[in-house]
Image 1 (cartoon, one colour):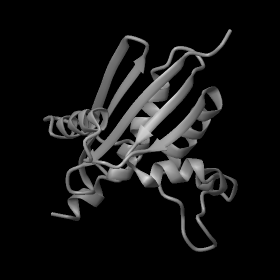
Image 2 (image 1 turned 180 degrees about the horizontal axis):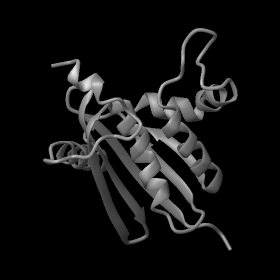
Image 3 (image 1 turned 30 degrees about the vertical axis):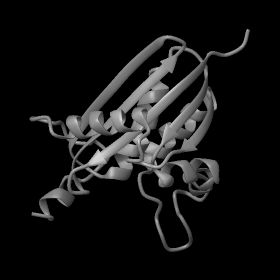
Amino acid sequence: MAQKHVLAYTDGSSLGNPGPGGYGVILRHGEYEKELSGGFACTTNNRMEILAAIKALQALKEPCTVTLHTDSQYLANAITKGWARRWQKSGWMRNKKEVALNPDLWEILLDLCKQHTVEFVWVRGHAGDTANERCDLLAKTAAQQPGLPPDPGYDPAACRNRR
């Protein structure tokens, strides 16, 4: 039996970078559509971009073929150009001197990409793609909610130090 084909649209946002952040996801399969969003008190835009992709894939109840749209070149390139796998193989080092950021999220995303057949597609942000615009709104709205929890993989001192 062929895998279901799911269209996923994702976006992340951080107000201040670092600062309060959120992610937005739209999943579509046939006539079915689901929106997901959430946020954290202190995080970065890149963390939320990766987390949006994670949340999209985690929401699938079975292995699927997924076309995942993102406006993050960092996310798309890290997967499609093999950067994240290289960082993982080198102990989360980008090169001999630079540590790769967000290894906690990359580990989860790489594992999810083994469970599903995922094609990452980069779309230009704020260029009229209605699904991307909706994800952006979901992410920004989530980032503005009161009482957001801490991002367990990010140091909240980074936000305190910006004030």
